[in-house]
Length: 205
Image 1: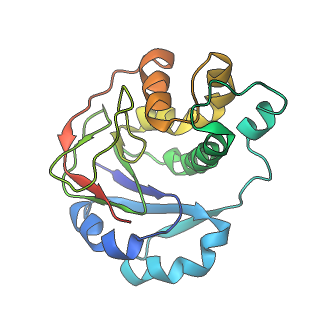
Image 2: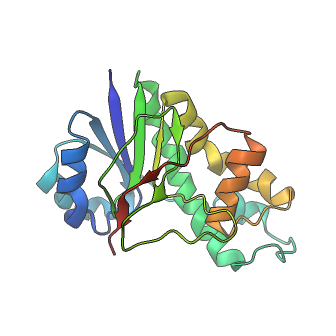
């Protein structure tokens, strides 16, 4: 069985969480996907791991920033700033799909500031948090965007959210609130069959 740990985002507090994550996912291959602007922090990764790091150039404008120009934004409860910020995070997820061309059985996607204490090899799972100082806000649905476990096909669908953001906005979805956005994308839009197991993880600030 061939498994992958996919770590995405700004490098942030990776130095504090890397050893625990590498220990837990010891039998997984590891890939790190971050922004080109983070390249000067690569030594932080290399201090803990010799896995490949994929650097992504940030787009001048995301598809959301282009799509929302001149449109009424009343449905965005957190405003254009958060819709833009999330679209940039999810652009990085889209770029991370390059790693799925390899024949992995299971993929775990986490952030650089996530510390994971339990894992699952479910076909598709978005865990809920347990026994941790950080509790994902529910905002009605509570599907977080920080940790995901899936087989390769479901992970490909998960990472593809960026390409659907303009259509989701046109459907009336609040794309500025991550938890509700992910609930709609997975449950109503993709009609995905995913689990929400209770696992212990944390976000280290």
